[in-house]
Image (cartoon, rainbow, N blue to C red; front, side):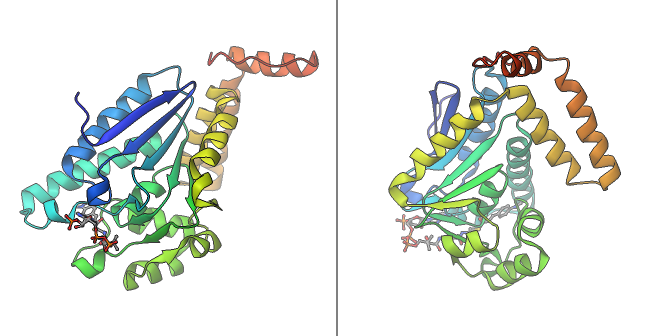
Length: 260
Ligand code: DAK
């Protein structure tokens, strides 16, 4: 597939995916969502990639939302199609069997904030800004914002952000738990790469199973969730990497994981 709006670069075991429509502040139109869907499939199938960084091109925005220019004239059927496409891509990203770090250098608004929330970890530059301004456009958040934001920051704070549509700065996003960490603007990608490499140096199957256990466990009661954890833990013992990790520890040598 020819990619016009998304760039994928592989750096060893880490893939850097960049939404590349800086003139529109990387707004998500349907073409970009389709390309992102394709990129998720590529990442899924690439056994050499252990961690992913998702970012936006340019200094101003991560993603300034769904593309309002494209959305404004949609009819009901087209609106539904757009919704199905967006939700499918975000869910696939959330469930991708590799950790995804969102590196947020500027505006993450509406669908952009929702895209960041579909990632596992959010690193923000001190210039980043967040918000769910949809109600000011006459719509509700549509790519999971009502659900993922409430789960991340609690219902009270999610309701305040969604009802007011206000835009908050990175330090406030950190305070409420919307982002994991805030770093100096120039250091954003360096920090994201360092974190991705740290993750990629660990056993990829164990990381994958941890992600699945957390994601699945957050959607059910504690007893069921702990069963998922036990299942994941057990599965690790059928991997060569578990043997390697523990043997290397006992033999006091460097470990070498093979994703097996
Ligand atoms: N869509 C399309 N173009 C956008 C855009 C967006 N979301 N955001 C910015 N742009 C474009 C601007 O139109 C402008 O284009 P030109 O005029 O240069 O051609 C260019 O990017 C630069 O923007 P500004 O000139 O406005 O730059 P400023 O620095 O003055 O302002 C801003 C930056 C981020 C504060 C402002 O651009 C802004 O307020 N943008 C809109 C932010 C927003 O409201 N985002 C939420 C969009 S609604 C659904 C699922 C999901 C959604 C909806 C439905 N379903 C399930 C059906 C999601 C909805 C949203 O995300």
